[in-house]
Length: 281
Image 1 (cartoon, rainbow, N blue to C red):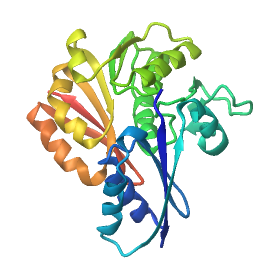
Image 2: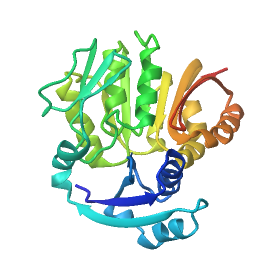
Image 3: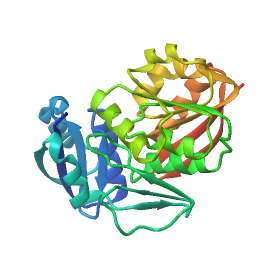
């Protein structure tokens, strides 16, 4: 089980532009999750990937005049659930249609769709703008009888949602074996035992047939690197859902999509984070 570094950056002044820029720069350093607030931002990265010097360089070269206060602490893998329960993870309701909660939540709203997620060492609880955007986009689709591939499944939240929305087959792919173990457990918590879970990266797509829907809530660099593989696993007329990047990155991703016979049909922007749908011609 991975240990993580929780990096805390307090800023003066503090605003969305500053915290969004910090999140974008830290994402390039393999940080996986971000919690902005009224005083700054908390970001999480696996301990073995943490590069203090690179973080200091981001601060030194920050394009907006800002005062920074930086601190960090280690979170042991076995303490991850406790960390979320005590500090960050409250039930979330999306569009009055879907409630996402943990097993330790006793008081939560009733919604047509209920998803139980115990995050452990995997990210994707619906709290971040990217995951929420993907959920909103999926809630407006008719997935009945459709096949779905969820690339970088994390906690398995999107794969689980697709099954609850009537998908006939869902495959969730995750490179981190501990995260995949968490996704499998979350699938069982939700009674979704038919999801095909695969440990691997985009090369694992060779094991799967082409699908009606392909989901990738990852980050800009991985998406740009693997977009051709994603497109190759979509049926003609199939839809590719992408998130994990900023609005400023959308043009470069859209240009790469066009090269793969994909054209954008819809986008959502929340706090500068994008969720977009592309259709295969």
